[in-house]
Image (tube, rainbow, N blue to C red):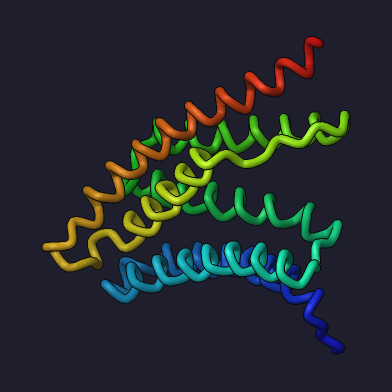
Length: 187
C-alpha cells in the first residue's frame, strides 16, 4: 500500500467510523469490565473526536480535500454522535429530550446543507455552532466516563448539564441555519 500525505485525512475518517462498533462493544461490556469499561468507552469517543479534528487540520494544511472526504467526514461525525447518544439514552445515562434535539438538528442541518450545495450556496459553520459541538462532545465524553470517574469529578452531573446546554445551542444554531436556508428556498 502506497500511503501518501493526501490520503491521511481520509484514513483518519475511516478510523473514526471503525471506532463506532468498538465503542458499542466496549459500552455493552462495561458491566463486566467495571471502571475500565467506562474509561475505555470515554477513551474511544475521545480518540474519535481527535481524529475528527486531525483529519480536518491535515486536509487543510496539506490541501488534501477530496470528494470522498467531503462526503464521509460529516457522516462519520453524525454516526459517532448519534450512536453514543443512543447508547447513553438506552441505559438511562443521558436524558432523551436533549439527545433527540441534537440528533434531529443534525439531520435537519445535513439535509439543508445538501439542498443549499445543490444551488451552490455555502453556509459557513458559525462560532456558536462550533461551541455547540465542543459542548456536545465534552458532554458525551463525560457521560461515557460516568460512574468510572472519581466521585469528586462529578462526570455524570457535569455531562448531563453540558448535554442540556448543547441541546439549547443545537436549537439556536439549527434555527439560524434553517432561517438562512428558508431565504434561499422561497426566494
